[in-house]
Length: 305
Image 1 (spheres, rainbow, N blue to C red):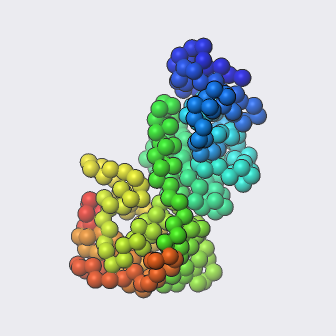
Image 2: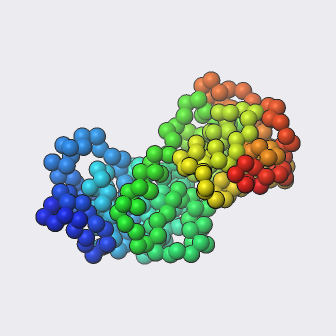
Image 3: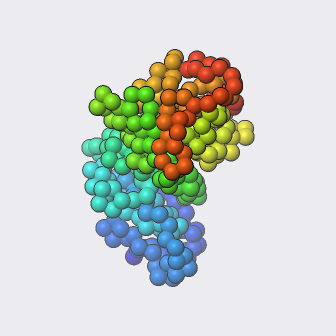
């Protein structure tokens, strides 16, 4: 038992400041909340899997997440992380990049293959842009760079969980030129037999476009509806990177896009040959959008090319 109630704001070797009054039990990587805390918060927060090899940092993550109400499983290597993800079905994973044996990117690739809709936040001591981009391109939903505070960690966890969409009954599948996109399962199956897992954001982009057939959706709106971000004053190419990666998986040539089409100075929309299946959203996605459609169109709202 680790008792945090005796010292307000006590900070351990992990560098995490745990609020006063929190009592955290930790046994075999499976923390439990005290009866008092559980009573005060009868609705449990989502389950989180922590994959971190440093014992002090791992304990700090467990303490912070448990105090915030999460049920937490903590393991020290990638193989154990994959086994826990399969057995316990967490709702979010905090994944260290530098792990012994199977590194974080390899674990992330396996998670995306087996659990394509599972949100993943990379935890890394590396601050280089290339490392962050590799994680995001590989399917991570967000990242935190060590050292970081418990407050920042919990804010990022809450934001990722908040924008993780539930499977939407109104858009279940998209029939696209050359294959099918299974939105609920977050998977692309091409007619040539190849298959690709979609990240949460990639599926979110397609769902957003499918819900607005014939209407170009700009970068700012995608940031609001898919990422849950306020785009005001935000300068990022995240949307562009995700669309490029999505087109890759769809086999959609950006120079002659037929699935995710760029509409000059307006935004992105689904091509006229895309068929939306599920609920009341059935039918084709194309329509008169104004402007010139095509993969080489001009700037989008918010600065997207």
